[in-house]
Image 1 (cartoon, helix red, strand yellow):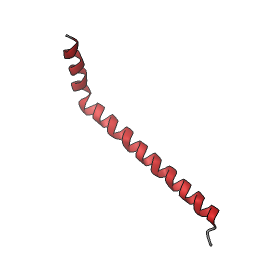
Image 2 (cartoon, helix red, strand yellow; image 1 turned 120 degrees about the vertical axis):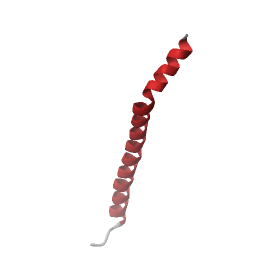
Image 3 (cartoon, helix red, strand yellow; image 1 turned 135 degrees about the vertical axis):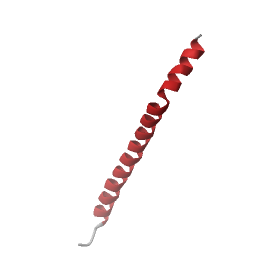
Image 4 (spheres, rainbow, N blue to C red; image 1 turned 45 degrees about the vertical axis):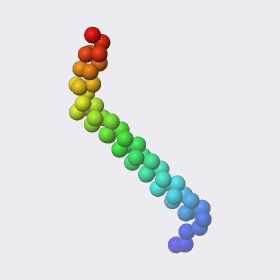
Length: 51
């Protein structure tokens, strides 16, 4: 099957959407992992600075 220009544009749109989703998921995953590992340190830091 020969892809027309519109088919190629739609394929690129879908691929770009999935790439953006993957990048956003990676950012959320890293931020969540950082909070899980360093959450206690961040809380202690704010408590110490309040005194």
